[in-house]
Amino acid sequence: MYSELTLIFIILLLFGFILEKLLELLNISYFKKPLNSEFAHYFSAENQQANLLYKQSKARFGLIQSTLGFIFTFLIWKFAGLGFLTQLITSFTSSEILQTLLFFGVIALGSSLVSIPFSLYFHFVLEEKFGFNKMTIKVFIADLFKSGLLALVLGGGIMALIVWVYLAFPTSFWWIVWILITVVMVFMSAFYAQIILSVFNKLTELEDGALKDAIETMAQKLGFELNRIYVIDGSKRSTKANAFFTGFGRQKRIVLYDTLINDLETNEILAVLAHEIGHYKHRHTIKGMILGILQTGILLYFLSLFINPESLLTLELNRVVAQDDSLTQPAFFLGLLGFGILFSPISTIIELVTNAISRKFEYQADAFATKNGLADSMISGLVKLSEKSLSNLNPHPLYVFFNYSHPPLLARWTAMKQGENII
Image (cartoon, rainbow, N blue to C red; front, side, top):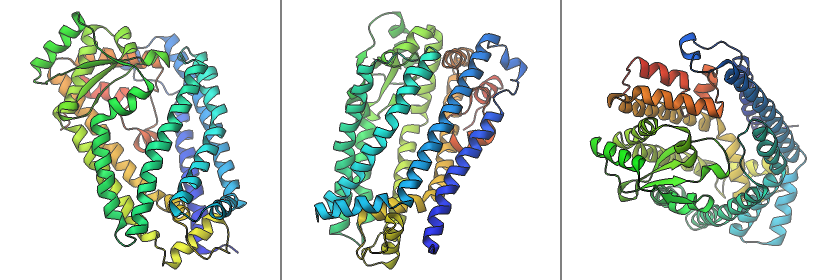
């Protein structure tokens, strides 16, 4: 007989999966919907057909991967795989810090091993078929190794710190951890390019020439203090292009993909950069960081309500996750995993809010480029990038509402053509 908490646990697991699949099916139903006639003329019939085939291929792959992943995860939980792992780890060491690191380390390793075949297929079959993949097996393996090492050092270090604080200050650990994570978030936001990005990619300063001169002239005109412009070697993994703004204060920098420089004309690159400068002018980096800090604080506060060594609820949550009624002492790592499931509805609501704010930020950055006379160049640049990457031109509105941090191209195009200024 299932306990009430077990039923809630199962319902939330199924709810998350079913909601995700329903949204994906709604999105698939829009794949063949005709585009706005005025908008559609930007894309050739051949490109629209390739776009449809790419969306269908990605959707099939995503449905299969996520469904198999859910079934695999559910079966491991149902047949007490997590309970077996818990017994194995607790018999190996009595250190709660080491237990937590081993528990999540084994889960992360198992998840990575299961996902490798899917990743190989995605990059070397699906993306290769449509001409996007530039990654070699050597780069793929190197990325796996580097990702694992970063997860071990950064993720493991932060996790160990959280457990230590929990053990030392069980009644007030949530706000102490909140302060510590805030410090880490601010530091990582400032030095992301140097610490994380440089591990996977080579960043070089944009060489002197007409493009650099044009960028510096525009930055001066827009009142943006530009210290350095970097080019990232995105072409060693994909033909898809991008540009982004990172850091703040003296650490702020603009990063251009080498593919962006190759694909766009100078005036289009300037428009994309004006968009990125718009983010800076509207303080989106700072605002986004504040939102992230608030989100972390909310999560940690609720976590403190569900993880308490003296609480019967914590012990019951441990038993549900491990599928083991014989547990007599709660483990931090089991409570943390169970909380992640129970908190998922609130997490979804928070994500909806942050995505809506992020989309508003994108409109504001577009409006900044538009105000500075770059609307046509911005539109032509976005169209070229969408055309080359075969991005979804007509996603379902509900799918956008739940999943998109950026507005779809059609919405951005409409706003810029109408001269909207969303402040």
